[in-house]
Amino acid sequence: MALFSKELGIDLGTFFIRVAEGERIVLEEPTRAAIVVDEQKMVAWGQEALDMYGRVPESMEVTRPMHNGVIADYEVTEYLLEALLRKLSGPMRFMRPRIMVTVPYGVTSVESRAVHEAALQAGSREAYLIQQPLAAALGVDLPISTPSGNMLLCLGGGATQAAVLAMYGIVTAETLRAGGVALDEAIMAYMRKKYGLIIGQMTAEQIKIKIGAAVPLEEEQSMEIQGQDQVSGLPRPATTGSARLAPPAASLRISGSGLISLFSGMKPETTTPGLSASGNGRAAIASAAAWRSAAGSASRRASASRRSAAFCPASDDGSAMVRV
Figure 1 (spheres, rainbow, N blue to C red):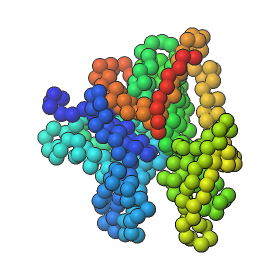
Figure 2 (tube, rainbow, N blue to C red; figure 1 turned 90 degrees about the horizontal axis):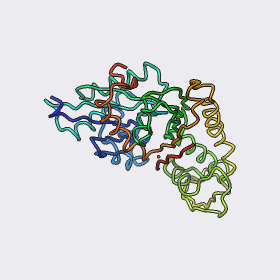
Figure 3 (spheres, rainbow, N blue to C red; figure 1 turned 135 degrees about the vertical axis):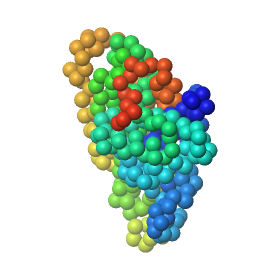
């Protein structure tokens, strides 16, 4: 049966949903859905729904069903997964796919069950869950099969996770329910307070990507943006620079202090004495691009190795690896 059905790895993220099959990414779409409010019917999803954001009448709503890495709207998530699987597998009347879905570390049993049931109701034959730090470690080829410690930092749109892995499992981990979305919201609040300009999340994200900096830069960078005047309601341009984004650091420190506390929770005493004494571990930073291969690698290795306890049937730019 497995020879004729698909086996898919799905990274169900706050901003993007990525699907891997074997060695390649077969789909990557924004985690967005356009809903007719009265009928609660999904009319568009993915990039098509994102293009409709801010341009629909009151009878429609473009929503993001995932918040902080977990399901916030169960029905919309189920519609989204169903449309996704139908696109990849056709009608699925006979050969429904087996899928493995990533979930953040430390989610509650209710949150895990919501993802599992949504995956089954969407039309999959079998659904498995894998914790995101473990999937990311497989995606960036960390040697987690060895008894040496491997530390991983996962930077996501809705959650930030730090974990120490060894012997196909997570030794210790911490999760911060904040990520790129919190940075976007801080920039939006700063532009409204400093310039009296209302900007959308997409504009705030572009500011973050192009000129955002947590520390002063040697060369000042600037960017011209277009927003809505807070008083008149008319469109108005404004120019902001990387140095001027330092004040939002007061707001961004909320996330920064969270990251510091996240690393503080990963002190050597939180790991086993053996790993603390080994001193030859590795560290990796995994962001959106790492997830592109993570889900596929996790799904591919799940059948090859049953030693990982993270496979639970019941229940945003590049990656780098450094030796520490």
